[in-house]
View 1: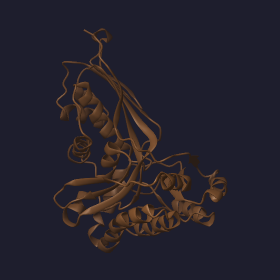
View 2: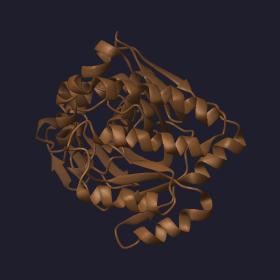
View 3: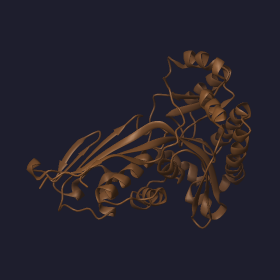
View 4: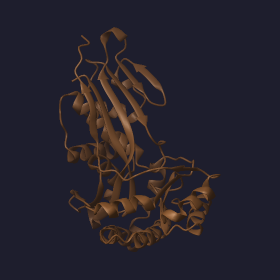
Length: 335
């Protein structure tokens, strides 16, 4: 196998954020409710033809051409190759493309890590399971790259779909799909609105402040964790209004974890959303910037979009059922 394209979904996390950090769940357990969406990271990987005269080529914000894995600038690619024991005996070409901006609260770094693991292992003729991809992506980000991230984004990207995910004190991650009736699933989609604030940041910087406060925010994190199961029950009843109001409570709690979570600008965006008819919403990701998700009645969507058009960008989105997958693979002879 010498040419692979993987497609890995971004996610929307509704409830339980904070309880997915190992610093929390290995002592208290954790739970989140999240869903993959129809926006994706694409990674193309192939063995570099020898005639190209260079060992490795990596295309992202930069175009890198290097002779050894150790010289690759992209940290996840460099360390991912080393972690999976790729060397310089066969050159590699890796391209990254994303439907959404990086560092915007959509779990892009974890989505990339999952897609990369899948692409590289498929290149070797392997077929990793979602559980294996989850474990490897978490290990790459936390243990190798030393990024202070949680464990929900890798899980959501690998498995896909709307899931109730629990994190055990023994470290075991359990994924339970939430099966909604088709009318309820569509109703939920019809009430979701995704808005990009136009600002980006490195998630680990905010996460560092959040993790430091976990022990002192036991009541808030416990309530946020419990909301994940509560949210499942509300959705199964088809009560989207209560779901939205529960999301408002979750955002209020999340803001209280650290003063690094929100900003005056984000508070302003959220206030506009609520004043325009949204039942609730939240800033996705660790905090400070990126995407805001609102739950708003369909007849109030246009009003909200119009109110926010001068601040950022409305992004049409639907919840999706697919996880990380190989969308193309082929064998070629570049000897």
